[in-house]
Length: 294
Image (tube, rainbow, N blue to C red; front, side):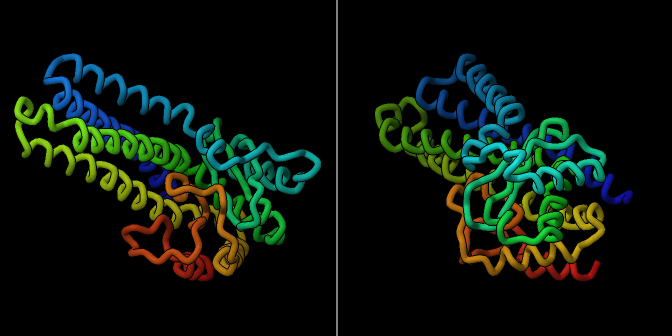
């Protein structure tokens, strides 16, 4: 238990660190663009700082709404999804948390995710495929896993990462296009071809760096949520069985994107072979084996 509480505290500080990291990356990209295209000056620095702050705050306060909208999630119906709502409420009481808002995604794939900035402002979304294909014990295991993300403050970390990784990618793309198609007129005034090369490399490497950070955090938090979820439901076999069904399910989640993939309980993209460094989640077989040992 002490280790779990230490991890919760660690995740809180990581959320602050990731905001600072993205703030610095965004500020650096905007400052470079301002310097190259408009010249070095106080305005460029001020604009970079303001834009970075606005993006960080927007991701913190409204990132969950963006993610739910991107996933086409709708509020769970009290009559149609009564068992789901009761399960969420029961496990939230067991976890000592306020009941999160519950959403449903119309999709045959088996999957789920949690989002929000803290336990008081959190949401859980479950696919209709999960509701149809999982039995009660398995569904409880999945909800327990997502409830653990909320309890461990993983949702703040993951939601911030999703919004800000996307923003860095867009910003870097704009810089890259500007360097290629609009920079030649200013090459001599702004440092020549060497600066163009530096700018292009910066525009390429910035989104890669933040994406690798997001993936590493995602993989680590899944193991913790599996363990905490098993502790919460007192039945690790339920989650293990659910993960086995997810692994065998051939349906690919239609509403998933590269930006939101790390939020889900398992990689929403099927038949993806990639190095572990580039994987959104730990291998399912490793997670199942860990749960079977509990």
